[in-house]
Image 1 (cartoon, rainbow, N blue to C red):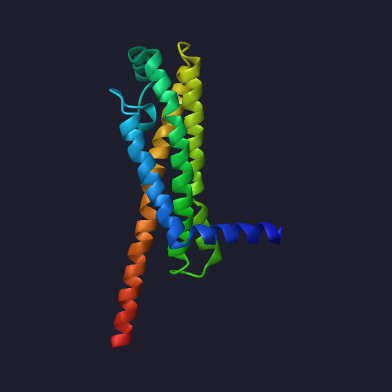
Image 2 (cartoon, rainbow, N blue to C red):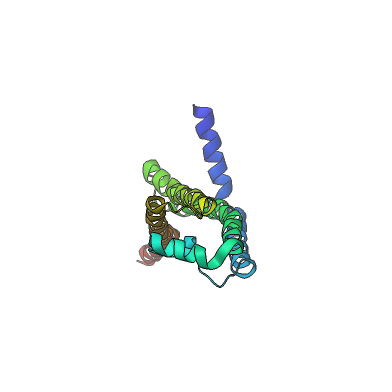
Length: 185
């Protein structure tokens, strides 16, 4: 058991180095920009729509037709890549930042691994939307409503987990200012 834990810790420490953090961030930004340029459509993807109804879902699918549904399915490939990239980014950044703020292993573990909740939520959303798109023209209203709920949860979690490292950086700044103030006394 200790060998597995040590391997996980070593992996997280590798993700926490500045180079890995910057590469994950750069990769995430590049993929996000490509998605918004290459896969740009005249409609909003359901993964990017907050609080849609089953009726809206099927109205959209009617309007975009087979080519739009194909585009919708294809955008999931870079979405999965983005999930992997931001997961690496947040695992590494949170570990790098919060190990400088506290030595409480439980707190560091919770903060470090909490972005996995977002990753799993987004993968579940992609799977559910894939089912909806592949089953169309069959209309699975309950699944569409459930998928919307998952999409809203994902959106809220995204905001939270993008803020966590920023809050940590702010806390580091405050900690350093306080430390300098104590040295000058």
